[in-house]
Amino acid sequence: MFAVQFDRFGGPEVLHLGTADVPEPRAGEIRVRVRAAGVSPVDAGLRSGSTPMSARLTLPHIPGVDAAGVVDAIGDGVAGVAVGDDVFGLVDVATLGGASAEYAVLQMWAPKPAAVPWTQAGAAGTSVETATRALDRLDLRPGMTLLVDGAAGGVGSMAVQLAAAREVRVIGTARAGNHDFLTGLGATPVAYGPGLAGRVAARTVDRALDVAGAGSLPDLIALTGDPAAVLTLADFTAREHGVRLSMGRLAGEPDGRHGLSAAAELFTQGRFAVPVEAVFPVEKAADAHRAIERGSRRGKLVLSLEQDRQAARSSPR
Ligand SMILES: NC(=O)c1ccc[n+]([C@@H]2O[C@H](COP(=O)([O-])OP(=O)(O)OC[C@H]3O[C@@H](n4cnc5c(N)ncnc54)[C@H](OP(=O)(O)O)[C@@H]3O)[C@@H](O)[C@H]2O)c1
Image (cartoon, rainbow, N blue to C red; front, side, top):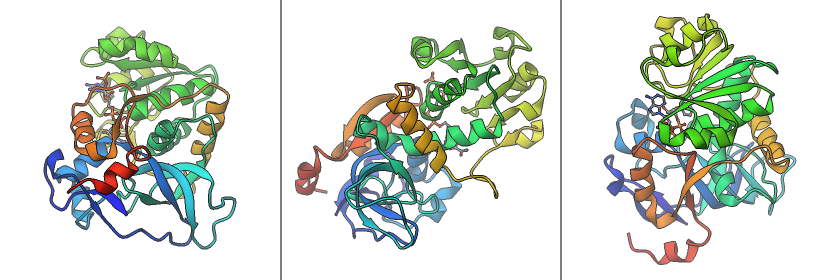
């Protein structure tokens, strides 16, 4: 099969299209013929070698943790899905990649409603799972107010919509140019950065979710009045502040499938969408990584594989 890959750590230029063996699904997994694959900050960090997780990779490595496609093989013990079904989801988190290829193995998935574009479905998996996990842990109830710091990005834009669907009022932070985007997602926008607590009326915030990891935890504690009401996904100083850091599913928690299914259902009801800032043909994966490294965005970046399947096959390394 063809696959985006890198065989040394470095800048986006280390990415190239090559060939790889078609992966086999293990028990509990499925394989899809990929139609679209998300591009996330974690992919760029792994490729650059800047994250400790890079040491776990075997090179060459195929980046990408999210994909949507058509089921083409089914591992032992899998029920409720058939060859030919359209699905979207996440690769095995332990492999840290594999999605930006002609075929990919998914460990967690949900049926893709026909109305959901492939590009939106391909980018949804990790961000929906992460946002759902965070909202569940924050024990949100209808009528509460949630502040999302870093609301315009991949995880933040999903968290805003999924919280609004729980009848929660959402305040979201973003750069000024993204405030209209947040309003469209259903959040009241406010600027991020120093002085955040002063820009939001205290005691109007019941819960706070830090997606950005940009040093806002003292402000978020001041706004909620309780470190236990704050959750971060990206600030590794959390413990110093008495704040919970969520890096994955805890024992006893449901896996992310319920979040994927719920998001798909909300999509068909017209209450959820995956904001896609840009779609790149698969042979332009390096450009997608350059874009993800620029930081500011509206939602997700995606690689489209379908219309480029023939081009990718004939593209030189
Ligand atoms: N713990 C987990 O399980 C988990 C899972 C997935 C991701 N993550 C982490 O979560 C973080 C966000 O991921 P993502 O995919 O949503 O990234 P993303 O799509 O790149 O979005 C990042 C957002 O951060 C915002 N931002 C930049 N500077 C900021 C600041 N000083 N204060 C507040 N917001 C700021 C940007 O907003 P503007 O565009 O408005 O400038 C941007 O939209 C990453 O660090 C990622 O590694 C954690």
